[in-house]
Length: 319
Image (cartoon, rainbow, N blue to C red):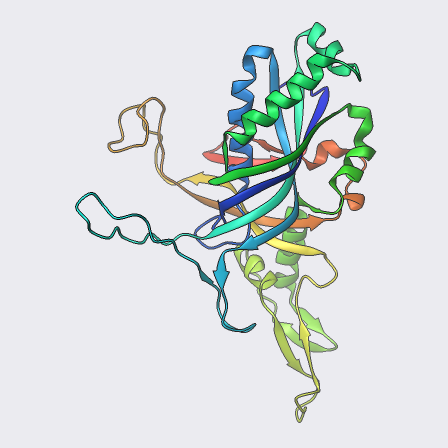
């Protein structure tokens, strides 16, 4: 995509049984690739109309993880499904999965390359515009998003680039997933220098602390006595991300751990049409942000596939 000239809003997309296990060590919301991949597949279906879709902004209105907790202090156990019997009557193996129901909105960058179609979409009362939006809705309803089934799409709208403030209003109420790698860098530096609270050392200076240590610290609660003889009421809880917003660890792509194999060279690969490579997940920090707190330039809020470089296959946010 060169430059978008429209924003396409899929409002209140209800997804059932999406994959909530986003990586080997994170769960709670599908991986970014589940959404960027769905929009890429949709873009290929619109290619004949000289329409190309680009980055995607992800806003979550509501979610329901399909799991069970005995109490607030218990570990979460994912609900599992029992599949139909095999042809010989045996019970199939239960494959552990984590599922989630979602109510999300997706804002997608769109470039229209046909001048006549561009002017038709710019018209408020264009029948061609109405048909196109209905066509996009039907196509996305037929797809999977993050492994889940699209149950309903409330509405599909088209916005000009000058209508960014109206997009923020249309997303309400929701939280938008933003990149927080700078906060991750700041927390890593804090761990290297040491963290104290009310003159109590929480985390001693660790010059070798890295970004993974920072991710673990974001998910850690420190229960601190206010004195040596503190009673149960004289303790306080400290977390390194206090005052920094709603932070969550997220996978943002993959890093190669093997050479690149030519097409057909790797046995038992999913497809022999493309080169293959062994990879491992790359992690970063995300932040759920209220729409009115988003930057004025909404182009900074869209997740894109990055051009592979140095054996890194990343999804980044921003222009």
